[in-house]
Image (cartoon, rainbow, N blue to C red; front, side, top):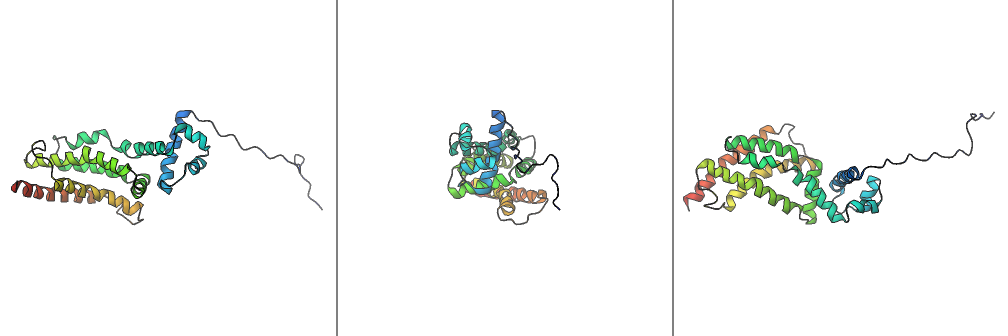
Length: 229
């Protein structure tokens, strides 16, 4: 015996149309594109095609190009959002605030900076950029050295009663010691997010070790520099 179809059933039921996608205001649409582009480039690198990005977002490629006329302009926006946008203006003032001991300034800065860069998109986009030979790395590191690392070197001189950098320019060794300290924070993020290696859950004590090592080693180099000058 065949089962009866319900009264409201039909063999030629017309399929329902999928709900229409909600139209977003242009500002919100642009934010969505940028957010998805950041994740997209972090996942696949800069070889990823804009047509695939558009498909992931659920928009057409022509619509994508209405907001960003080419891939280069979209990459530039990603750079501004992920890197320059996370360099807080107050960090520049913190580093040179001599009302606080340099050790305390460094600890506060690197605690906040480590939180900012210990991020999937930040680390992976940075690595992909370097492998492709793009200028994101050079531009960002140039800003970082100018706004943070060289001021740290100058503050260390002031704390140690050595001549100001306006009188005696910073040596290569001084800047490299600052980079060595700084690189420890980035490398831990690389270990976790690129190499998939475990790192301690609480990084605060390691942060202190890195800063203490710098504050011990860098003055030795200053003594050597000025003893031979």
